[in-house]
Structures are given as C-alpha cells and as structure tokens.
Amino acid sequence: MFKIAVLPGDGIGIEIVPEAIKALEAIGEKFGHKFEFTEALIGGAAYDEVGHPLPPETLRLCREADAILLGAIGGPQWEELPVHLRPEVGALLPLRKELGLYANLRPCMLFPSLLGASTLKEEVLQGVDIMVIRELTGGAYFGEKHHENLMGGGEKATDCMTYTSSEIERIINLAYDTARKRGKKLCSVDKANVLESSRLWRKIAVKMAAENPDVETTHMYVDNCAMQLIRNPRQFDVIVTENLFGDILTDEASMLSGSLGMLPSASLGGQVGLYEPSHGSAPDIAGQGKANPLATILSAAMMLRYSFNLENEARLVEEAVNEFLERDYRTPDLMEAGKKLVTTAETGDIVAALIKR
Ligand code: IPM
Ligand code: MG
Image 1: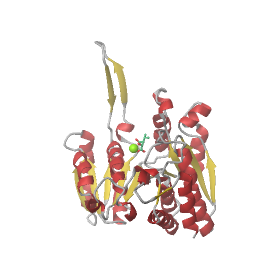
Image 2: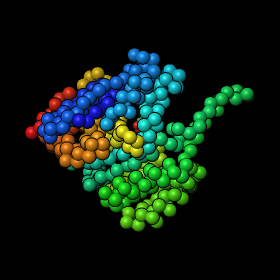
Image 3: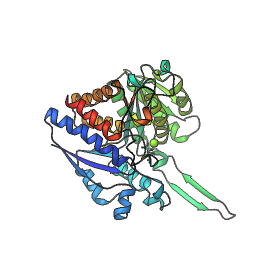
Image 4: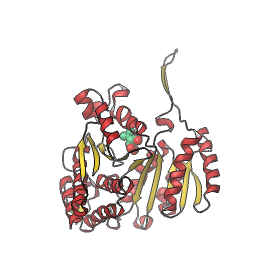
C-alpha cells in the first residue's frame, strides 16, 4: 500500500487534484496497487481554517506519507497578510525546506498533437524534450533577508543569494544521474560573469564536468539560456540551475509544451517526494471547471516513477494523456478551432477511462 498525502490548497488546486487522484485510482485498479489518500490543509485555505498556512498536522502527515500530491496555493485575499503567514513564504517554501526537497525536476515534453497550441513555430518545437532541474532549497529564496527604513527617508530591501559548495555539488550530481539516463547532455546555467554565488557554481560545475566525461557538459549564462530556449530548444537535454533562475526558466520552458497547464514537477532529495504542477492557483479561473488538470495528472505519473518505482504505470498515465490529446479533447488553455472543449472534471474522467482501457 502507498500512503499519499493530498494537499489541494487554494484556487484551482481544489479542482485539479481530484482529477490526478482519478488517474491514480485507475492505475490502482488496473495493476492491483492500493493507494491510500489522506487530505490536509495548506496555503490560504489552512490560514482561513486554523490561522496558519502550514499547520503542524499537515507537516506531520507529509512526513509520514510515501508521497505528497499538492495542487496550488495562494490568492489575492492572502497577499496583504504578514509575510510569514502568506501561502508562498509561510507554507510552500518551508514545506520544501523542512522535507529536504532540494531538487525540483520539471520535464518539458512536447505532445505531438499540441504542436499548434504553442505560440512558437512548429519547426522550432519539433522534437523538444527537456528536463530542467531547479535547485529548490537555496539561493535568494532562503538567503538572509533585510528590510529597513532609511534615516533620510526611503526604504532598503535585501535578499541574499547564498550557496554552499555542498548544496551545489548535490544538485549537479543529481543532474548527472538524470542526464546519464537520458540524452547524456547537461547544460549548467549560471550568471558567473556577475554573481559571486554563480562563480562558485561555475567553478564546481567545471570540476564536476571533468569527473563526468560520459556526459557532455556545457555552461551557459542565464540570460543567454532564456533566449536559446525559444531560439533553438532542441539543443537542450538536461538543464541544471539555481532556484530563482530555475523558477523563471521553467515558466518560459512551459510554453514549449503548449501551456503552463502541461508542466508537471517532482521535488526530490528528502525522505518523501512532493509532486505538484509547476503553475500557480490561477484565482482568475478558479471554481469554473476551466483549469487544465494535465500538469497535475502528469505529476502523479512522476510520483509513480520516482517515489514508487512504477515505470510502466507512469508510462501508461503519460500515454493516456497523449491519447486524450490525440482524440482532440482540449481544456480552454489549449483550445484551437475544430477541437472538443472539455471541463476539468471531464478531462480527469476521460484520462482515467483511457488508463483503465
Ligand atoms: C513555483 C512557484 C513558487 C516558486 C511560488 C508559488 C512560491 O512559482 O513552484 O515555480 O516560486 O517556487
Ligand atoms: Mg514558478
């Protein structure tokens, strides 16, 4: 039996998580696995209910689980709270940190039937298959922070981008392990021409490149990488980068797969893996059945692969998503003329039926 902590969170999180559960249950039925789902509060929903975005019971449930399925957190109604009570800083970041989830894997794959859904040209997208590995528990997100009122008026705010050599080594190590199982190409992304933390990153990446001669390593500045991702994305296999750069580059990379609603993620490195779509809580479309649950369903596939070691089951979920798209079903974010518009729940039902078939 696999114990899964379920944290729907806020906004569309509440709508997309049940659809991923449908997919997991379909897998359970087909392969005879038992999944036990236990729900807990996180984010704004938790703040409203118990006064804190990451209640201790939620953290305990996560620690005791075999894997965590998270929807999304945050929304305009919680933006004015004191920083430590806001869903992002008060719940998601401490959850990642507490569980030691230093590696965030964001695979950017192209489903052939979505070639036309991207804003980019088909000939640029053809054959894209990138794994971005984002460092998740260091850098400016977790470095020292200051905010002060200046004597002469005005304010001053500081976020320190801090990395230790061991933090850099462990994420690059994981990136080499990943690259070795894929196309054996690794691009390490930094801003070593300007930032001290990036110079340390580059020094370590250069040293580790020499220790991993079976993988072809390149080094790229983050600004150039942002441009290369849309100029010629096929040049990339695995990208490894620090936290903030990875946050930005993965939103950009999601457009290669047609929509931010298609980009799953796995956060690894601790006792228990966390699986969540790369997108946010989309308060503007919440509660209307318009959200695309495929990134969450694909995150569930990553859970099967990375936490439960069920590769065939993971593939079947991905194939079902592919088949769903091949049959011309589309959520609003992917809609094109001549396709069949479906709701969030219909998407989950169809994918689950395709899995059970
Ligand atoms: C992400 C999100 C989060 C991040 C936010 C919600 C704190 O953008 O997972 O990419 O910046 O890490
Ligand atoms: Mg982000």
